[in-house]
Image (spheres, helix red, strand yellow):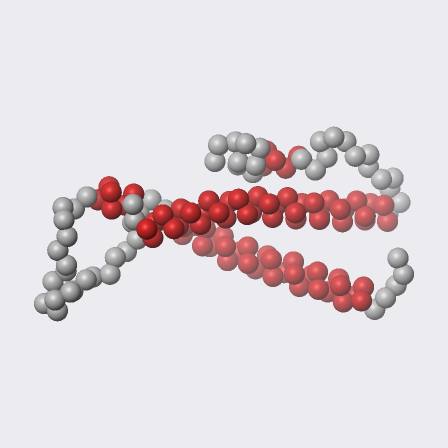
Length: 137
C-alpha cells in the first residue's frame, strides 16, 4: 500500500465513527434501563372527556391483566427490545470482527507471525450473547 494524504483523514474518520458509536451506545443503555423497567406495565392513557363534562369516558368492566397484556404501547416497547437484541447481536459480531482484524494487522506489523486460522476462530463470542448460539432469551 502506498502512502496517501487520505490515510490521516481515514484514521480521523474512523475515530469520529467510533466516538459516535460509543455515544449512541451510552444513550441506548439509558433507554434500555427504562424499557426493561416498564416492559410489563401498560402504557399511560390520556384522559378522555368526550362530552365535555369533565368525566372520563365510560368503558366496560375493568380488566387490569388484559389491559396490561394487550396494551399497544407496552407491546411496542417489548417489540423494540426484541428487535434491539437481534440487531445488536449482529453489530457485536461485526465490531468484534473489525477489532480482531485490526489486532492481527498490528501483530503482523510488530513482526509476529500470522495466527493459524483454527476452525473455531471468530466464534468464541457466541456464548457471551444470550440467544446467539440458540440459547433461550
